[in-house]
Every structure is written in C-alpha cells, then in structure tokens.
Image 1: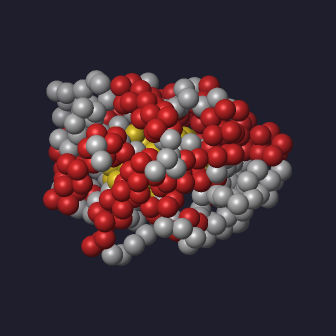
Image 2: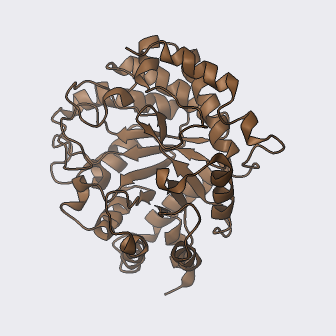
Amino acid sequence: MPSSLRRQIGQLLVGSFRATTIPAELRALAREFGLGGVILFGRNIEAPEQVAELSHDVQALGGELPLWVSIDQEGGRVARLEAPFTEWPPMAVLGRSGDAGLASRFAAALAAELRAVGITLDYAPVLDIHTNPSNPVIGDRALAADAATVARLGRAIVAGLQENGVAACGKHFPGHGDTSVDSHRELPIVEHPPDRIRRVECVPFREAIEADVAFIMTAHVLVPSIDDKAPATLSRAIVHDLLREELGFGGVILTDDLEMKALSASCTVADAAVQAISAGCDGVLICRALSADRSRDIDVQAGALEALVHAVEDGRIPYTRLDDALARQRRAKERFLTAPIAAVGRPLSQVVGCDAHARIAEEMARYLS
C-alpha cells in the first residue's frame, strides 16, 4: 500500500498519551502515520513551562503540516489547566450575566494563555442548551437554558478565541442538553422531532457557523426522529445531511472521544472510526481517558488508523471523502497554525494567571449562584 495513504490517514487522528513528555511509542506512531494532533489532559500537565516545551516537542512529530495541540478548557469543572493558569468559573455564569462583552473578554484571555503555551485548539464553547435539570453531564457547562442566550454568548466566545489565535470547537452537535444519561457511560436518546431540533438545539450551532467557527464536535446521542439506528457521530443523516448540507458548516467536523460507552458498548473503536469518517466526520478523537490499561494506548490508536486505511483501500470510504476531510483539515491548519504559536518575547508569568485575567475571572464569579 502506498505510504502516502498512511500519512494521509494519520491526519484524521487527534490522539493521546499518558506522560508529561512524548513517549517513544507515540513517536513511532507518528513516524509511520503522521498525526493530525494530540489532546492534552491533566495527566500531561505539570507547569506552564513544561506544557510549552511539550507543545513544542509535539510539533516535531509533524511533517508537512503542523499538529493541533488541543485541550478541553471550558472553565468550571472541565478545565485541564489549573493554577497557576487562570481558573475560570463555569460557563453558566456568563449566561446569568447576559454580557456578551464579558464572554468575549473571557475568551480572549483564555486564548492568550493557551496560545502562550502552544495550545492551538480548544474544545469550547459548549453549545448545548441546559433544558434538562437532571442532565448528569452538561449542567453548568452550558451557557444557559434558552437557545437565544446560548447562541449569542457562544458566538462571542468563538470570536474571542479565534481572533486571538486559538481555533474554537462548538460542541456537542446536534445537542446534548436535553438528555438524562451521560454518554461517557451509555447512549443517551434525544426524543425530539426534527422540527424541534432545528428550531431549538441547532440555533447555537447555526450562530457559531455564521461566526466561522473552525470545528464542531459531534455528540454520541441517538436522535430516532432523524436516524433511529446510528448515534449522531456515526449518522450520515445528522453529520452530512443536517450539519454539512442544511446548516452549511464548512469547517472541520470532529468526533467526541470514540471510547465513550455510548459508542464502545456496541462497536469497536476501529469500527467507529470508519463509520464516523464515512458519515462525514473529518477527524476522530481517541482519548484513552476511560481505560486503565495504558499498555494498549498506542495499539488502540494504531488499530483505528489501520482500519481507516483498509476502508479506503476497499472502497468503503471513497477517496473523494478522504480528500474532502483532508482539505478541511489543511484549511483549518493554514488558518491557525501558520503564525508563531508561543507568545514570543513575553515571559509566561506575564500571560499565564496574570492580574488582568484574574480580574476577568473575578467579574465572572460575581454571577455564581
């Protein structure tokens, strides 16, 4: 098989590792396939200087294209960077404030700290609408309980991140707000009819698309009124027909972690990767966050890449679908990864956890209930 195909397939993976430096196994995977990027968790982080060095080393894994260094840094309980980085309140406080200017200033400050340590893609904002008080996974991660507020503030966060050099990723399409189970543990079902999905859940995503959001992450939820067989991540009707065609999203569609039980209870990570790309996703996320077996970390990621190679070779994934995904990845990287990544000439202490950012966090915290 042509080695170029393996290198192309590697661009579809945002992978992971469990160390504060790059392990030899990940370097070997990158030599064989290349990588689209990596996601960082608390297990990868010791200090700002170490994160900056790690981000620099990640770029050495790349070839023609740089890699995404990505993270879940929403604020509140989903924040991988802790003090001395600025610690932000949960996003619900912005909804209580109703202040788009505050949301924009928050996002700009967040982007400055991320960019200073080489992080170029943030899986934020959450665009789910908090319409179900018993939702175990969204809650105060959501901006508000109404679509208009989530849309308006979500747009401000997208702009604040991206105008300051960090790609934003709206999540979780087509909406994880009105669910009563956690997709990390089982498959949630969204019972609404299509017209309700379009009229409510899609509104914040439509607004983010108008703001030119770089990425949208899919939800591992079943929406029987649109597709009664496949979860959204694996559903062409949702990924391609609704998000790509009807809403007109031209950026990168990325899966949520393929190892979450909502998917892995019924299919392997490798099978899920093939189905997701076939459905219209442009990249897959494999976090190895839910397994204690670190010995298989690279094997699981390599297995997904091998499955994608075979699916292209045997025609299950047309070359045109691969080319489209790669083109979207390339355009996003050219947009965000061409400028120098770190804050050149500025000590990290002048950016990370600085007084100006602390004042923004304090202003947000006034709206804590």
